[in-house]
Every structure is written in structure tokens, then in C-alpha cells.
Length: 462
Image 1 (cartoon, rainbow, N blue to C red):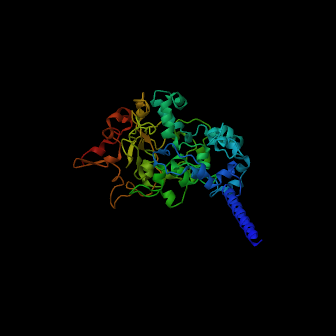
Image 2 (image 1 turned 90 degrees about the vertical axis):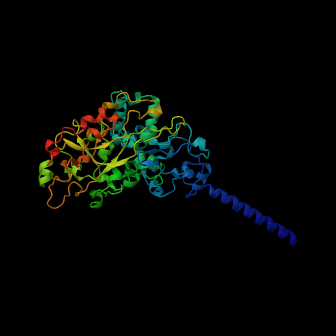
Image 3 (image 1 turned 135 degrees about the vertical axis):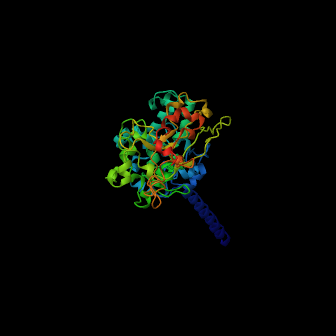
């Protein structure tokens, strides 16, 4: 009898232990709120389960002008249970439901079925349908926003022999593929600013699945604009300082660039300086034209950045690389990005008209005749349609720069006017002359060089 009791207790212990294991396994398949993995939310809030079922990346993360993108594992990019998920659950977007935006099939633990049919990884690529039902004005206006790449597409199309951005879709399919692979990584849909990290930032959910109305400056704006705007504004380059608007006022990008500007107004623009919503120095700094003798003398001659910018990042000739094909793997940039400073004749007088339009800062672009040779386009059909230097307004403003700060007893022109000292032209490096151009740039760019357009007295031996 005693032996039977021992056997009974042993059997019961084993059954209880097995039951506990079964329960434990079952619990492992549930999310933080004990949801079954047989649902979108249950799967994407269960980190361990995502690690079990994830599909490894087949291509490297997107790169861009700012360098290679950081790498996040596929399961990290789609995990919803992190910081921000609680806020998402309280939002109106949560009430829409996963399939309301992403399509696919809910309430299944079959990964292929869940992501089948018309599943959308990034619903805002169909913004009219998925975002427009609630945000129609923003969606309609943003269709022509420069965040969709309209300005860059225009230049690629025109240099390729077409009329403008409206003809971009007529480019060869392989060239469009190259553009989408390399250039479009920073041209954003709604979600890239408000839900996920931009592709150049590694992609994936940034804060659970929270919809962030005001994008984070570093996590979103600077992540895309790291090679130019953010690079300059935060003083990333050696020997430069952060912009005074950051250090003195702690301004974020949105203090100057409001949502109406960033979303667009629905009117097509040929390039970003054609926007009528752009901020201007005069919006905050009134009376500039008369508040000191330097402004009174030069206010109508050039843009503010000529005096108040530091050196800024410039691009160089680039072969758009085709990393997906071993026989077309391109060398990428032929001229590494470099810090520089060049004053030239205004290259967009039809856009930047009137005051401060004669001499402006320009930035070298990555344009080159054979940009697309790794994608089957040997040479642009109409490369000389645009200069290889663009009008620029660097975001690295300081009150006192190497041009505004002169030594005691020195003329205000000491650090900016060219002068001949014993046959050496001092300050010549500040200006874009034809002899600064590479051979393949001359026809496109010589029209904005300062040759013959500066005071003759600057070149006289004193």
C-alpha cells in the first residue's frame, strides 16, 4: 500500500511538472499582455517569438551620402513592445487595427498567411488610401513636396534629356531602380518621419509603434540630413562650431521649418528654394539692412551666409553604385566629401531674385557625366543643363566668422576682398574661378564663376 502511494505521488509529481513545462512553453508564445502569437499584436510584442521566426536580411541596409546605415536585426525592426508602445495603444491609430493599415491577415500564427496578398510593409507608400482618409489635406499637399524627391528627380530627368520631374518615370527602368536604391533612401513617406526610423537610420520601428507628431530632430531630421544640414548645424566637422541658433537658442529644425513647409502646399516646385514657405533671416532679424555699416554697404549684394557661414561639406563626382550586381559594383564617390567655402555668381537668379542675389555661396554637388554608368547609362544626354555647384545656405551660422572678425586697425575687407600682395592673390580661395573647375565641369559651370565679375581694383598691385 505504501509502495502504491509512493508511485501515485511520483506519477502526480511528474504530471504536474510536465504541466508546468507545457504552461511555460505556452506562456513563452505570448506577448507582454499574454496575447497569443496567433495575432499581429501578439506576435510583434513577443520578442522571443520574433527571434524564432524572423527572416534574415538578403541585402545590406540602405546607405547614402551620410555613410552606411546602422544595422538593426530584422526582429528588432518590427518589435512593437518597446518604448512608446503603451502610448500607441492609447491612440486613435491603434483603434484602426493592424490590417486596417497593413492589410494582410490577422488572427493567425502562420507567418506567410499573415503577410500574404496585398500586405503593406510601409502603408504610407499608399498615403492617399491609408493616411488620406484622416489627413487628406496633408497627403494631397505632400504629393509635390521636395521630401518626395521632386527637385532631385527633376535634375536627373533634365540631365537625361527629358523636360522635368514629371518625365522621371520615362527614364530607363534600370536607372530608376538605381535612383530608388541609392538616392531615395532619404526621400520620405509619412511613416519615415512619424513612425519608423528612416532607411538611412537603419529602418524599423523607432518607438514601439507610436505615431510621433513632432519628429525627433536627431533621430529623424539629422539622420537624413547628416551630410549637410545636420552635419553643419551640430558642428560635426573638425574645426567647426555648432550653429549659433542651436547653442544660444536651442532651436530644433522645426523652430524655423514648420510643418506647412515640410509637407508642401500642393504646388509643384522645381527646387527647394522655389518654395514660398521657406524661412528667411528677416523673419526674426528685423532691420538687418541698416543695423550696421557692413549690412548697409552689402545687404543687396549677397546672401547672409557669405559672411556668417563657416566652411561646409561639399560632395564630389559620384558613380551611383550597383551593390546588387557583382559585374556592376561601382566605385561610388570619386571625390571624397570635403569641407570648403566658395562664393560664386547666383546660379538661380530666376528663383532667388531681387536683394542679396548677386554673389552667393555655392556647394559642389555629386553630379558627373557618368553618374549612372553602373546602371547601364554610359553618360548623361544633357549633363551641361545645370552647373555642378548649387546655391546653398549652410546651417552653420555664427555672428563672428573668419570674414566678420578682423584684427584691430584692419579694414573690414581684410578677410574677404581679394588683394595682390607681391604677386600673391590673398583671399582668392574664397571665390569660384574657372581654374577651380575640373575639365568635365567647365561647360556646365563656367557661367557662375566670378572671372571678370569682381572689381578690377582687387587685382591691382598695391
